[in-house]
Image (tube, rainbow, N blue to C red; front, side):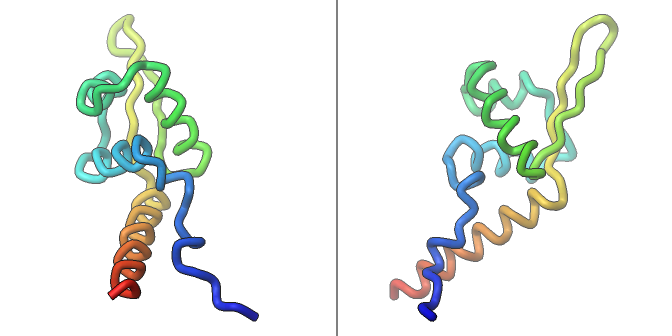
Length: 101
């Protein structure tokens, strides 16, 4: 049986550049408000929402909806699974670069 190429092990959910940027931004914080993340990454509501939904579906982030006073509040946070997925992603990239030498 042929050995699987390392690049075939990359998680396509987080390999997409916007999703990777979302995860990288969330890694250093406990949580971020949706609008704050939107501003930091210069994304539209719809674009950020679509990518966050994909990351939430994969279990990489948690989306918590509540209210601050009478205004809706959406907060995003990285899950343990998401942190592990990013760690695995970085390790695979390093392995690919090492194999290319």
